Each structure stands twice: as structure tokens, then as C-alpha cells.
Amino acid sequence: MLARQEIQRMRQQVMALERRQALLSELHLARRANAFQLVADKVHAYYQSFSHGYDSTRNNALEMETLLRSVMLPDVQSPAFRDLDAFLMQWQNYSRYHAEVMLHCEQIQPLESDDRDVYTVQCIGRSTLRISRDTIKHFFQPLLADEEMVQRLVGKTYDFPFVSRFHFNSNGQVFKLEPRAELASGLFDLVVDPFSTFSEYNC
Image 1 (cartoon, rainbow, N blue to C red):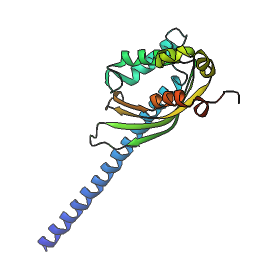
Image 2 (image 1 turned 30 degrees about the horizontal axis):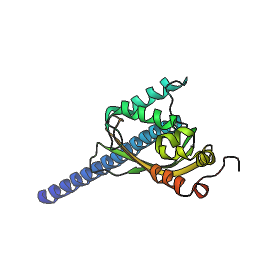
Image 3 (image 1 turned 180 degrees about the vertical axis):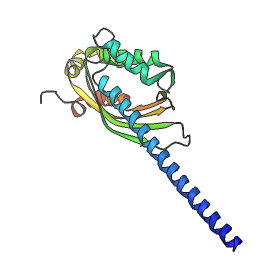
Image 4 (image 1 turned 45 degrees about the horizontal axis):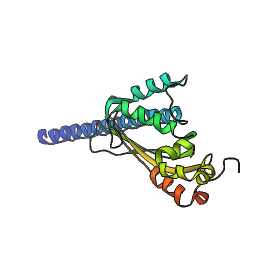
């Protein structure tokens, strides 16, 4: 009789532990889902703020820089730049060498990570750039010798897709950014066949 009661008590304890484990698992999933939503919102805010490029002389430049520094660590790792200050300078030059910059984040996807304290999201989007003389001067200086070509290209636009991965730490800041875009190939297409790559804005 006592043995049967002991077995019953152990079964109840096991069931209680299983329920507790299931509850903890649900709470963990809910926390991760909430965390992913928070970091996705930060990525969305970043692209919304930088959707037309960055110019340190604009009235909203300080607001944009403050947002960026709140989202990313000063020593953020990236194959495209050495730190956050270099990233801002890259944005400055990127915007300076084009007459117009338009950046659109079409989709933000959460990605699983082996590290439970890391939250990775991926943005899939598209960039549209308007060519200026500075674009050609900076990227394709030899073309300046062909003024007719320059005149045909200035004012036209081209676009290309991009995919960027943002790796957030448990404090909600980006410690690693992996951008991938086909800007170089788009500019190469400009030289090879400008009329098949570019379209007038008002067409």
C-alpha cells in the first residue's frame, strides 16, 4: 500500500515538473518573440530614418546619429567598416556622391542563433540611387573624359537589392552588422549598357 502511494506521489511530482518545464519553455519562447519584435522595430526605425541617406549638415543629422548610436555599439563589427564612426562617414560619402538616395526595407526576418543571448534579424530591401556627376567622378573617374556619356548618365537612376543581417546582444544593441549589396555591379552595368540599366525618374 505504501509503495503504491509512493509511486503515485512520484508520478504527481513528475507531472508537476513536466508542467513547470512546459510553462518555462512557453515563457522563454514568448520572451524571445518579444525580443525579436523589439529588435525588428529598431531595424525598421533605422531604415526609416536613413531612407534618404545621411548628411551631417541637415537639421535632422543629430537625431539620426543619436538613433544610430543607441542601436549599435561604438565598436560594432562589420566587413564593410571598422567602427560606428566609420559607418557614419560611409553613409555621408554614400549620400554625397549621389544626387538622391532612397532606401526601402521590404521585409525583416528573425533568424535563429546558436547563442540564446543573440538575436539576429535580416532585412531584405532595395536601394534606388540618382546619378550625379560626383557619382561618376568618385566611382568611374575615367568616364569624365567622355562628356557625352557623362551628360547621358547624370540625372538617371538605378536600383539594386540588398540583404543586411543585424546581430543584437541581450541589451538590444547591434554588435555585428553584415551588409550585402550589388552597388559595384550596378555601376558596372552603367558603363556597359546605361540605357538598359537606368530609367528617367519621370518616365
